[in-house]
Structures are given as C-alpha cells and as structure tokens.
Length: 273
Image (cartoon, rainbow, N blue to C red; front, side, top):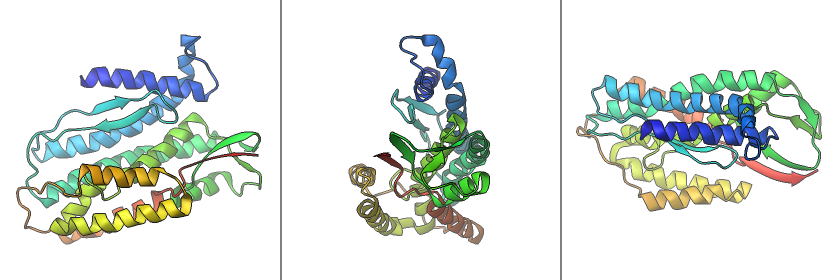
C-alpha cells in the first residue's frame, strides 16, 4: 500500500507539474517529463519531512509505519502530503517532542536550498493578465529579496518549478507547525504544556480567525472547522508527568519563531492586471 500510494503520488505531482509548465499530459503523456523538476523537488521535501519522524521514532523504539503519501491530481500541490501511523504508545514528553520536531526540521533543511536554487532560476517579469500570486511569509520575503533584490512595481518573480516546490515546502511546514490536534505543532505544544495544551489550541484558533478577518482567505476558517471536528484533545504519552528539560523548552521557542516566520497570511491571490 505504501509503495502504491507513493507511485500514484509521483504520477499526480508529475501531472500537476507538467500542467503548470503549460503542457497537456492528457493528450500527450510524454509531456509528463516537464513535471519532473516540480515532482522530484516536492516529493524530496515531503519525503524527508516524514523520514525525520520515522527515523526519530525508530531510534526511540516506537513502532511506526512507513509514510503513506496521498495523491491528489489538482494544482498547486498534486498531493495532500504524507502521514505515518504510530503503532505503539509514546513513552514520555521528550520522545513526543523529538518525534514532532524532527519532521519539520529535516523538511526545512531540504526545502530551503531547493527554494534558493529555484529562485535563482526564476526570472522577474511584468505582471500581465490574470495572475495567481503566491503569498509572502517573512522568511520567503527575505529570501526573495536576498536573491532577486528589489523587485520593480508591477513585476514579480515568475517561479521556476523548483522554486514553487520550495515555497510549498515552507507553506506545508508552517501548517504542520500549527499547535492543532495531531499536527506536528500539536505534538510539540502538548510536550511543552501537557494538560494545558487545550488553552494553547483555543488561543491559536483565535489567531486563525484573526488571519481570516485580515486576509479574507477562507482556508483559515477551514482549519478552524477541521480542528474542532478532529477534537481539541491530544492523547497523552505513557509518562505525562515528567516535564521537558530546559534545552527542549528553548528549542520550542525556536519552533514558535519558525511558525511566525513561515506562516503566510494570504497564501494565494488571484487578480487581473
């Protein structure tokens, strides 16, 4: 099943990548080759993210499945990401924290150089016609300025497929770091706050509502509904009393900083120039 889902996700990301390059793989299947830069870059980022979880869990003796990739032949992702299943209890908060943080960190280690290389290949052109523009997080805005310099008004970076995959890698990492339910950020937040985790969730739901009111992107409300549907509780580890050590608490502040730097208030905007 894992291999079948991976192969299906390779096909859907190739399909989406080829479409974004202007090809028509439905009429000409050989045009799927145009989707290789996007597909390979995105799956490498997502695969390393899940590999971080998997290797850390195995290092602690936690039984865990191989990643299940979820194909979705719809732009701009071509996939709904990947998940792994825990098949044995988490022994304590330290292990829960380390498993939760390993995926985003390893994914970022891969996503950032892919994004930098992709931005270097991306031309700056005037905006014309109907434009689908990616949003700017603080980290992405800084990288774009560092690599492309000041962009003239009325122009923008036309993303190379690798740059788009890198941007999506940062976006997906930010979503995963949100302290909600079974997301990586939820594991990290529970490891830090224990039974006070629910207060953190309620506070962050307020942040999502505020983001919707500012950006008018309905996706933030979808996340609020999903969080409520999945429940605001988090299954505790076997040892739910021993708190995290100080170095991991400092690392949790780094994670919070990453969430702030990577979160994109308005991920996508469509307008006519």
